[in-house]
Length: 422
Image 1 (cartoon, rainbow, N blue to C red):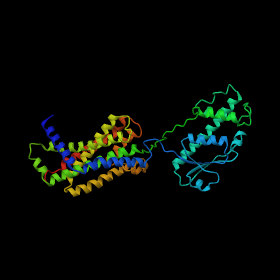
Image 2 (image 1 turned 60 degrees about the vertical axis):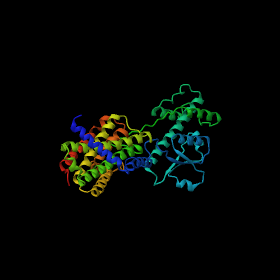
Image 3 (image 1 turned 180 degrees about the vertical axis):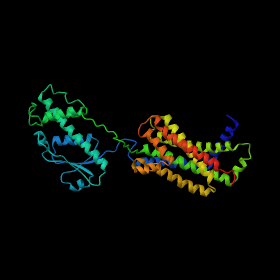
């Protein structure tokens, strides 16, 4: 290590020492950001198992088949609430409800159409209601497939046995069609007795014949939620906030107290002093990120993506960008009070428009585009690519290049504008 680099490192470590001596630093860099990660993560439902969709069920038939249908709904992941027949008040307060009408089993056994009444309140969450409809249809199909398979097994048709186990929509369609076909050779109407019930239970206990897979269509993106949103957001926000405030305040204070002027009398070049100040702020940002990453991973069990190298490189580029911003603010601001007020307001603003308070995926396109004037938006893009969308390390190349460009511009501006005496 050259002498100039060694002296720059000494200046950087001295800045860290001064930061550590500030008593509120434990609160601002550890306690508050971790509390924010937990709070914001719990306000969303991501980062873990999806919440169950509430569904009220009114069974007016009270038959073997209506109970089987209710069990099928439960297997679909609904949070079932059984409503007694005639309890209109409870039914009206439920966001989504299903009513199984009287005569349900007799109609199905006779191969007659029978309605299933699904009702959703106008103020119910639209995405939950859409999910409920999909799973309701799946439960209906499963009941029909189980009926078809049960009838075929009881009919003794060897050619039909096992034909419905194929996990294809065509297999399910042919099975259902065969059940109600006049030339299928099946007993019509179906006699739903004790023997039928035992066989039906055996069929229902076997692996599902219908699977549902979902994926984002077109250019849409899933909205990050839970710790997948809160952890990257708080890392970005507090790296930006604490690095900029502490960096700008200490540099402004050193100008006011003529500390920089005295440092300039030492056998140090201007470049070494600037490098030391920039390095100190970069180390502070990296320390903030390390605290939150470790807390998120080991205290909250947060998923950090498939590319650790990509994640670390993204954090390094973000640290350089916010450290350069701190140097810039320290260069242009003249008083400590001014530095605290201006840097805090601007940092919160940059964090807000950059997706730290809410995902940019939920805002209009023009606001999402405008938000990318903030380095926080590019950092969040990189974090979400790795953590929320499962991308590899190559996904952070563009965000990292943009963050390095921010770092270069503000570092050069700060170096140009900084005066060692005020």
